[in-house]
Image 1 (cartoon, rainbow, N blue to C red):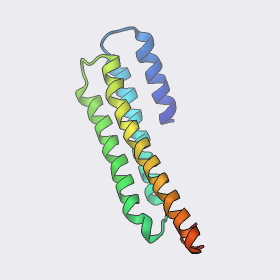
Image 2: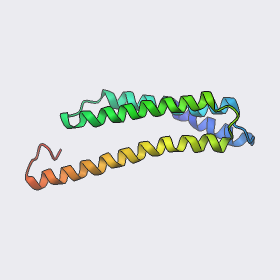
Image 3: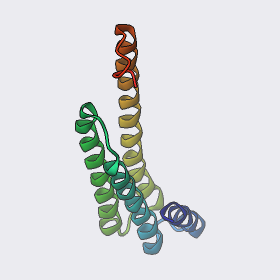
Image 4: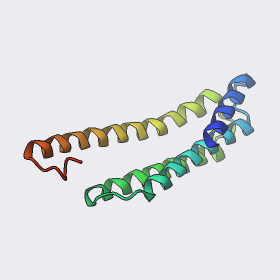
Length: 125
């Protein structure tokens, strides 16, 4: 539902044609982005990981919860900001998540390849 709300908020903000983002659109866009971040953090935090993944799981969950808080803060403090400004402030929140996920994936692939070369089938999973 939060993804649908985000889409509707973006549509409302873009179609309003105002230089300043309407309050309803700002709260809808930022609030739904916050709900998405927190939901993903809770889902990810509930997954069981091996001992090596616990540290990164905490970082990932904390990062997502922080980004959700920042998005909610933007909704609260962003009165009078333009549509493009609000969206430009939200995009880095998403990019941080993407960069972190890609870096974790690359690191996992490297450790997996090293484990396969050493013949450790359990670590390669």
